[in-house]
Image (cartoon, rainbow, N blue to C red; front, side, top):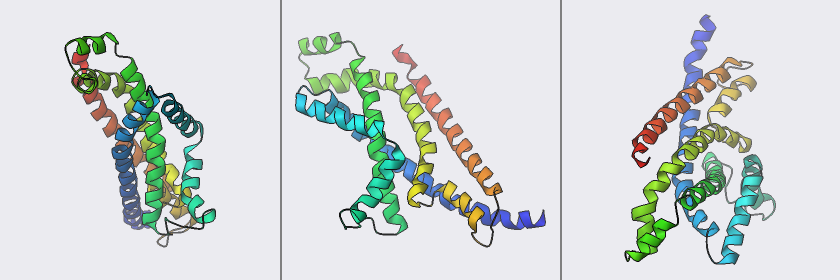
Amino acid sequence: MALFMQQLPIVFGALNVGFLQTLKLFAVTLIGALPLGLIISFGSMAKFKPLQFLTRFIVWVVRGTPLMIQLLIIYYFPGLVLHNPIWGGGEDGRFLAASLAFIINYACYFSEIFRGGIQGIPVGQDEAGLVLGMTRSQIFFKVKLLQMVKRIVPPISNEIITLVKDTSLARIIALQEVIWAGQAFLKGSNGISGAIWPLFFTAVYYLVFTGVLTFLLGKLEKKLDYFH
């Protein structure tokens, strides 16, 4: 028991550092993927057929392949195939590569949610807006956008919760997120080795984080109930 109490602050110190990396990856992914997903959704609905086909093909490829494979390709391809290791070997390079992979992956998933939300709004609203002399951009931002937000909040919320757990995949390229930090004590870290109990604490970090997000997203959904 004394040894456990001695190891506890060391383990929590390492887990806190790893969790901060997890939070950074989560935040950067959302900031990049949400607007990019909206742009991709416009491409997938474009009347210019080559653009529509290309956009939908990219979305199909990204959604149809594992995020882990995309991480490995984005991180290792420049160095191994192009002989141009743009990411370097440090933690910052691994974080940039992971961020790019996560943003592209989640933007494609978000784009399909956005597309469904936009196309689910009755076409008559476009026609009414045009009759009133509004431009298509005015119709989208002033009439359709808030209705779309109401429709997409539940599926977007599910993807956001999934993103929290998917950040753990970044350890495949040795990004030192919270699970990487907990697993390090199995192999030997800070004088501690063969300890599995830190991994149980990593689960607590995820449970608390997802619990807070679920509460906040639920509050947002209730605030949008006036669109019923």
